[in-house]
Length: 164
Image (cartoon, rainbow, N blue to C red; front, side, top):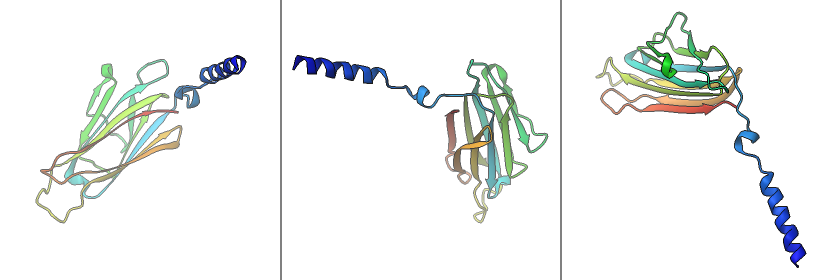
């Protein structure tokens, strides 16, 4: 009986030592990230706020993102020392596309919208957004956001994504 208990202990010990952590099961790897934000509704009546940060490589280096669509669009605020980039504008197009210059292992973003025009128009359609996140051109996450009418609490969508 002692031998059975000893063998059982050894078997349990070897199984517990052989478990893999989450990073071993789904290793984090650096990839080019693209975020596409598609807008619908009366989006021209809103101020859109999009902030992106935590763009790190596996060696913890900062990576800068660029706005590729609409062409010629720039960040309204870039705090490179904090690895934070903000776009706060009235949307000029139904699509906003952001891409990392180099491969990253993590990305965080925040999206919100505040109605600034035609606040009394009851027939307007609230701004809605579909946010698609791609890693090396493979879709890895999709989120939806709907803005509140003017005068109501502004909700925001925040995400932090480890790139696998």
